[in-house]
Image 1 (tube, rainbow, N blue to C red):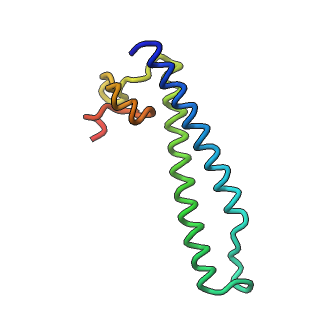
Image 2: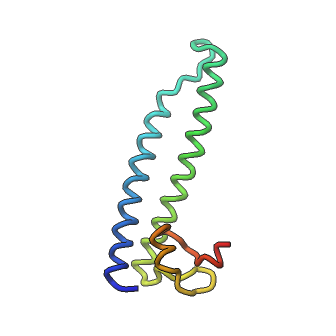
Length: 111
């Protein structure tokens, strides 16, 4: 992998990280305003709010996992190990990294 490609992946990962952090921040702020007090809202509205809260929490967990994978990929770039499968140590194809820049495994090991 060339230095130019490596820098392009670093930039892409940093942009993705910024987007995920912004999404997570907005999601956490909107969750603060969720009303679950059954005395103040009807039972169905409360059930809708609980369901929305669960969906939001699941999405936040997924975002946190993505952020962790991005941080790991950025660390691999820093250590000079980016683009190598963490299982078999073969090179991860550039098209795979273009589609999924934080990919820790080659396509064969990911299966």
